[in-house]
Image (tube, rainbow, N blue to C red; front, side):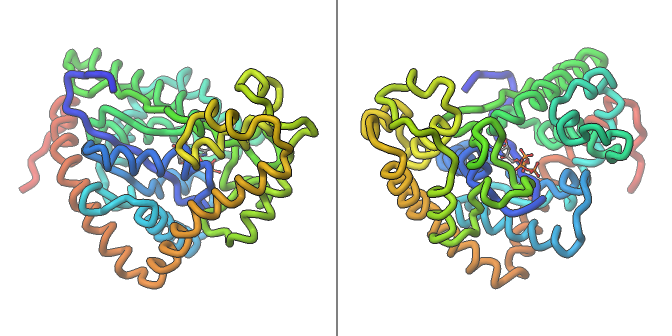
Length: 341
Ligand code: AQP
């Protein structure tokens, strides 16, 4: 990891806007766990304020937030070693988000690909929150002075914006206050694609359930989705070059490599020349073997929602203890009076 003048701290978040997918697991959570286990100071968040930028049924949002917390813990996030909480319990996020709304420029926000994709032709009816989303995301990260943010490829542009906001804030106030955050986008599965269309990201909000593997899917469902995944008629190539212009083949190979914890080259050295039928069977076995223990642990944890709430409440206390003093400094820098007893 690159050196900065600030102490290393890792932050990342996931929206409780639906069930977790294999994309979230490989692109984000699995890597969150390795950063925790590698000894970094890690802060992980269920970003419920982001989730409501599009409509969420209140009961479903509560359930999804708990399920996401269960997914984090079942995947190996230890609430004793990582700070784990839901965003809305720590007001520093929203407060710094507002200040960053006054730092970010309309031109920067208008260029955000995710805004253009999600608002689409209906942008007049999209929420103001959906437009401001990246500036709240910058606040999520910078309220902790986080230096490293593990994310999937789709979040790269938002992290560049976070760097722009930190740089502008530092410049206009003439201080080296916010760190310039490093995105950590690594591994074979930084962009897991839909099982139905190798050019589209696997997403929890895709209308087709067959397009994704959910962490709550049964072994049979996982096997069926992989068996039905779109492929081409050619056998697997023996080297990476042979995956050019074969997005679906590339996706399944990337997923295999990421699940097995080996490189794409090593995967193709083993599987090159095989037909997809055979490869899909091996992939389904590997996916089930990896996900089944996580799925059953998530189900076990979900039997005790009060315990999940207790864990994330404690996490929120720890998060606030880091973020509040940073927010106090921000208010002093910006020129706001703090005189409450
Ligand atoms: N397909 C993916 N491949 C690799 N990484 C992915 N991530 C999401 N999808 C993939 C990473 O997961 C983290 C959390 O994402 P998020 O839930 O905050 O938002 P998102 O990126 O918009 O994810 P979804 O599943 O597509 O959600 P919806 O459908 O609600 O928009 C991020 O690090 C992301 O990169």
